[in-house]
Amino acid sequence: MIQLGTVLNPADNAGAKKIKVIGISPRVGKIASLAHVIRGIVNGADPNGIVTDSEKVRVLIVRTKKEVRRTDGSYVRFDDNAGVVIDKLGLPRGTRILGPIAREVKERGYTKIASLSREVV
Image 1 (cartoon, rainbow, N blue to C red):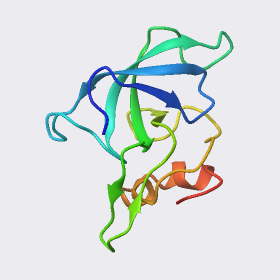
Image 2: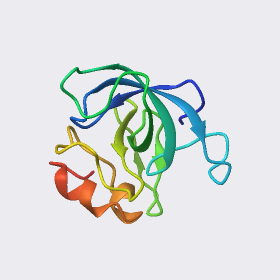
Image 3: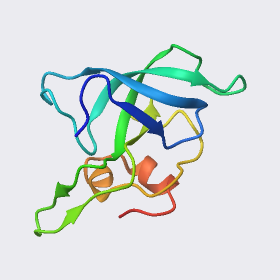
């Protein structure tokens, strides 16, 4: 359950320290969940990173604290809200994905992100 103003942890090595949600597509609604793309702004950035401080970026949500029901009846939830900085083509701007990601990300067509991560839950 990600909404405007939510602060996400970055799940990649693009150089962001925190990402604040500033926009959610009207197609998604007011609340975004796993495998949705949102607009965010970088709060604090590594000087040697790919992204800069206060840069507007597209972010794919890969983990949420709020549980998500799957079609088989099971639920999945994580310890934090996290996202991956992506470009216009849906490819990650970083070279590594840190931590597990949800299976919904791979099912939505972001196979490059799923292949870079160590674990798909």
